[in-house]
Image (cartoon, rainbow, N blue to C red):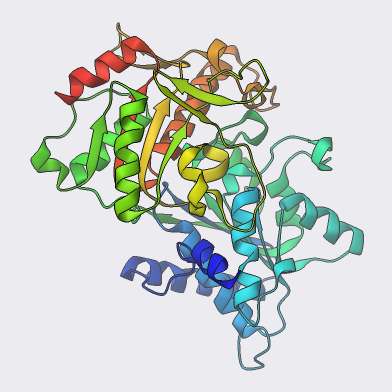
Length: 403
């Protein structure tokens, strides 16, 4: 069990921090200490794209503050703190910290609704609250998960003297968790707040040309693939067939490990109701959330499954094999990717939201949610990205751009 825990933690619990990360942690500590001395609530917002090390900073900061709790000489002496994330796989990883460190316990990590309802029931507040993946916080009432208010961040700010929250608007993937800059500004407008930006890409060990191509691709823009010289060792490849992609990916996995196939929503359930991803000669089950001790990406058997945003968001892989479902079509007039909402199988992402009422805004959100999912999946791989598309026209166009 201990070995499994360390495998889960290795991407987050790091000591090899960059100069930028050390600087931001120092600024955050100063902000937190000043906020604790104030008579008002404060919010620190860490903004950065996928792979910029947001979770690493949050983990390091939480550990330092918890280590100071029993020390009378520490500015964090006796503080009531907690950590929350609205993502079951990530929550499991963080809870493992309680098995590794003396001053951290499993109960310190909870889902947002549990923290809100628990504090309200006890009539208590926190000194400092850490929120990872803030863009996954609910922005509407969800009685199914016992959240009956209207915005989880608003409630969490109410219940904590200082909130440190991570945000990336390019990872907003559902209407019930709809966030944009305007909504975030509105939520924090009445409390002192400061943004701490991160812009250095730590996950993808790729050249600027590769990063620019993947950034454009994740927005639906189609550009010619970088030349072999500009790839600088990053394994970026377009495949005509998913079966061929999987064959090569398995060879990579045998050499370096942590190579996995992932997919966007849009592949149909079979006659038995099971969810499989089927393209050409490729046919593997799409991983549904399955709570286990070891996270999905770390399990040896997951090489024969297809991951989703629900199993890989926030995690690192060495190489990603990305399968674009039929919902991702080729718009020949604009020479770009277009999402066909009618082919999106997971209808949960398109539920009504009080923040989306204008028809044009709704139509844009339907594109953005799916492209954001594409962005999340495309940026999981440290050393490589393989792509295959189910839509024949999009597949053909990607192959042309790879020549």
